[in-house]
Length: 342
Image 1 (cartoon, rainbow, N blue to C red):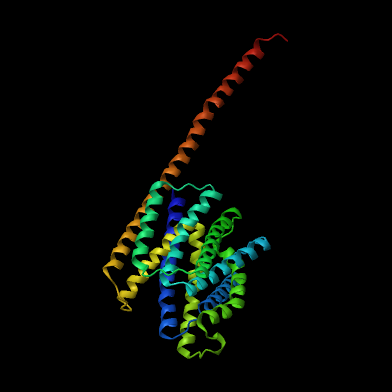
Image 2: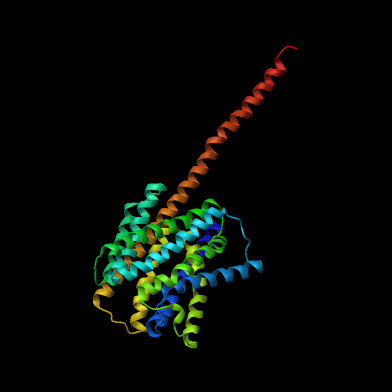
């Protein structure tokens, strides 16, 4: 019972860390890109991952965690896939309207559900599907303003959805099947994610912004915000792997949409962004969907736990008579030995 409670506290802590760090980095990056004019998102992400790896390497050298060897091919492919998915999401934003990009992010949940159902035989109840539908409708109402379609943007969006879903499913599957922690997996895969973004980032950013990251004027305040963004990113990357490992890719995506609602709310209260009744209605519907999802998942988890306990007790009850019968047979055999002629 105590072990279950500590596990629940661990999940709550991971969720809180993920929300707090993600909202913080969005606000920091918005100030960096909008107010200070630093538009190089892909290159910035590569720096995030480099700092994350260096931080984890220091932690490893100080014996904060043990490194567990993982098959190199698995780590390389996993790292490259995650790096490519980040690049594709940035390209999708560059080629599509903000509304269509938000639709792309919303499509990740149903696509993940589909993949887990088809390939991992995972079951999602109708109640959970309904709560997810409610969540997606709410976030869509709150955040989608315009939809402009084009062929290249649509292809990039589909590729971004596919790579993101597969990457997040693998994040969960690798941790559970290879029995590695989120820290161990992130430590070994971060260099490959950083490498592909570090190489491709300047080209992607130049194509999207028509500016060169190497010729940008780095004032002290810009360097300060980049440093702050990289430090917060360590917590973001760590909590991402932690949440997906402890829960599921779908739960992580639900959490991501909670962050979207919080960012909209913070944008209104702190940065005085425009806020309409439509935004408020969408956020309320999304929050209702999240609460229902959380409740239905909790009920399903308790039901599964009770079922496994009853099965275990049932097995004990089934085996007791067999043990009793074995003893009786033993006594009967002794009696026969006593009365049998020598």
